[in-house]
Length: 232
Image (cartoon, rainbow, N blue to C red; front, side, top):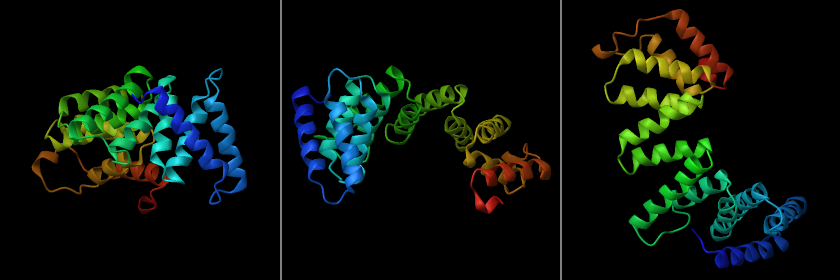
């Protein structure tokens, strides 16, 4: 974790950054300054203000050092979203670690804090993806995604379905996860289930999925409602 001395320095830099920032609208600059003041106040648990100011620093100013300081303040006060965005900074190489090992350690630590300590579900999803894509730990990734699905977090259900499909698992179980993710509002699950129910496959292992025009239409209708114009 970033030391408090460094956090306070980053906060001072951020205050100066927004106090005289011509590229931000006066309203946004004033609003961000107000959030920074609340973030700085130790008597307030203003973690969301720290995160919101950090997002302005990262997205509008590309000042990732200031963003890191603000997210760190939020994370240190128990805000899972702040921990998640710290992981994102290192994951996307916006803040550089000393080497590959330190980078992986920091990403894992921040995502785990977000997920395990503070139960921020996007942090759990990020941890699962990182485990699979960069650390090659399929078992842990599957377990985290399955837990997310049990908590009715739709992307977790989709990921479980995709992992079952990709690794040659049970096709019926795969379809259950895709449909579950669709019902929970994940458009990718609707699209994939519809595509399979339409019979768009030529591998024998998919034969368990019987062509079902009615179900395919239901999935397409849901995908359309969720914003997939190709399904409309």
